[in-house]
Each structure stands twice: as structure tokens, then as C-alpha cells.
Amino acid sequence: MEMVKFKTDPNINIYYTDTDSMFVDKPLDNKLVGDDIGLMKDELKGGVIDKALFLGIKKYGYQLNDKTYSVISGITRNDLTWEELSKISKGQQIIRTFETRFYKHFNSLNIEILSGKITITLNNFKKLVGNNYIVPNINIISNSNSNHKLWLNKVIKKLIKILRRFKIIDNNI
Image (cartoon, rainbow, N blue to C red; front, side):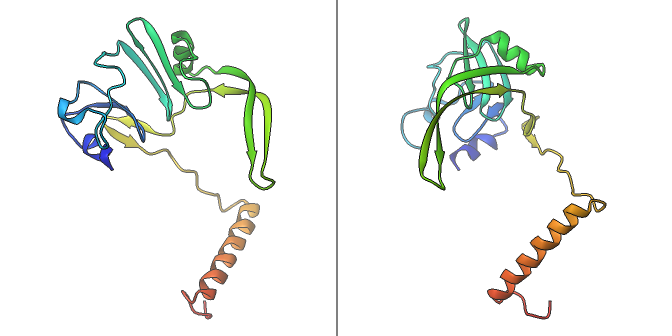
């Protein structure tokens, strides 16, 4: 909830934000920055970003003092070059391989160590335009598809059964 006061301040232009970070157009007031709970932490220690690319949720990079920094969920921090970040911003894909990654199987409580690859792409699910989030279009199931109708009817019947069991609706429905 602490982020709301920054997100609703008309004097702050936000370039990117997620649950625990924010990139803005100017330094915050010193009384808002510190190590205490509820205060913002200045991870750049007063540095000013030269340029940045915000490619999606938990997917961004910036240059500061001719050094590239990147945060991409699923890969090692600062692993991408500025050229790779630029390619992603233009719709290209970057593939990274990894030797070991731990996978938890909750049904069997086993942990598996596997190698694999991750494809990094531009993510436009959540767009920030003029400090307002633009929600993505949601595709509605077409009435012409009988498989979807069958599935939807099953879901409705199960929901009605649950609602009757907890006496939220009566048996006449």
C-alpha cells in the first residue's frame, strides 16, 4: 500500500513500477528515502539513469555511467547486454540456456535439477500510458464452439451444486 502514495502523486512521472520498485523522472524528496520500513530505497545511490528500456513485468534494463544493468525474471541479474535489450524492445527474441535449475514437484514433494533454456520476449500485457495502466483485451469464448459450451455448462453445474450445498441458492434454480 505504500506504493500508492507515489503512484497517485501528480508531481511524479512514473516510467515503470512493480510491487517493489519504481523508476521516476526526478529524485524523490529526501524524507521519503531511507532504510526504514515504508521508505523508498535508492539503489542507484543518487545516480541518474542515462537510458532505460521497460519491456514488461519484471523485465527491464538501463544504462548508468556506461554500464548496462538488466532485471529479467528467470535469468541472472545483469546478464543481458544493451544490444540484446534493444533487440527485445524491437520484438526479437533472445534465448538463454542454463545448466542447472531446481524444479519442485508439489504432488510428489521431489526436487529435480535440470538444464534448459528460456526465451526472452517483449511483454505488452500491462501497458503504462500517461501514468495510467491500459488493460489488455480479453478474448471472450465464442458461442459457436461446442467444446467450450460443454465445458462452460459443466462449470456452471458444479458451481450451482456448490452454491446449493452451502445454501447460498435454493434447490429450485
